[in-house]
Length: 309
Ligand code: GLN
Image (cartoon, rainbow, N blue to C red; front, side):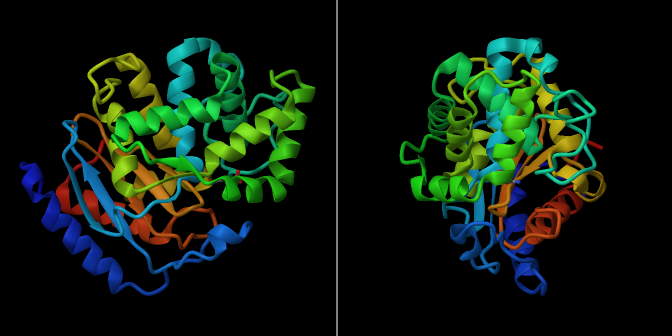
């Protein structure tokens, strides 16, 4: 059925949560740092936010979790808002077909990463945002607090330290791109900003609200404009084609929405003009996307008829 009234979001969420609870095989939490490995894969939460800030939720929808690569959407938007198309001289906009932390492609593409959502591209975006603002992670945190209305949102510094201790691949990406003059700040400074960015903790409710500007065609929660209508469309398009890495084709096929996943088990998604979603369940598939998260978004678009297609 095509959904006509937002009042029906709550029964849809309740139904999805009940279905997910009965589903065996929920994947495995990320194991590259202890804080993520300790998460229980049976946890599940989901929130829907309307453009006016009304939020519906089910399960662990108010439980903060490690946002990880979901933050790449916000740093991209914050940098695009500041420097516009100049960003695209430093990072591409094509799906990579490779895992999120891949080093291949960089060498034969002269240190220009394929897109802003694989780690290499996100490092470039954070580097540029840091040059623009002198505090990329702080700028991100301020934005998330303002859009979610939650002043308690914070960076988990012990997760950031753990990211850093296990950050050899990201360090390699940073140094490699620096060798092509595609990194502006000293690589250790950039890595510190990037690991702190990944370690922001927020709930499904917080992240669904913070994503609202992409459903409002670039307008922030306070009514001011962050992105032009065209830029908001561009960010949504990149989420659709690149937001779930080498599973972006399957995600578009199953869910049919712009989405962005993180290895903490969260996924945000946008129904432009209608609503934003965030789902969290820490068990991942082999490509680093939440198994129950993708399943829940798949059910949401099927049950409501809301998708970009
Ligand atoms: N901190 C993780 C990393 O950089 C984030 C990756 C992700 O969420 N996909 O490897």
